[in-house]
Image 1 (tube, helix red, strand yellow):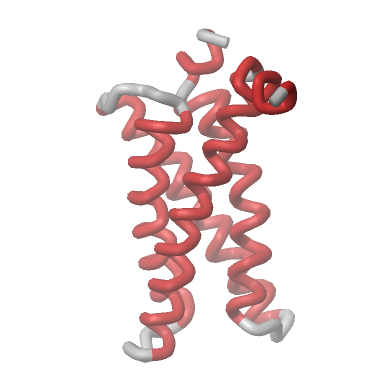
Image 2 (cartoon, helix red, strand yellow):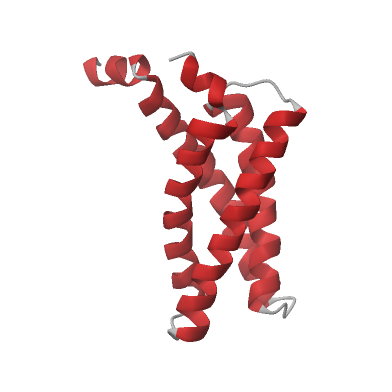
Length: 138
């Protein structure tokens, strides 16, 4: 119980955990969409990855805005989130491309590596730029 109390009292840690949970739901959307598009629709890897990452973005925006950082929807927040995630999707695509196409690794493994790396990028950008007012309320 003491650990739970400490987590609740540490806003950054609480936001990190909530962002991780939000990211897990976005991951489910992203990963399942990627595999459906590749396996059943024969969509090329990078098109499928960009589409699946975008759907993960939408899921992530909803969860992170309303739950992780408890912000109200504003055009400024959405614009920042969009810019940060376009960069995140580009980073995701680059990692998947390099690991799958250049290094010859299986695309699902490449995607998993990309997701882990981009998660840390995303949390940092969300915490210190997109949801800046949540930082100042700490």
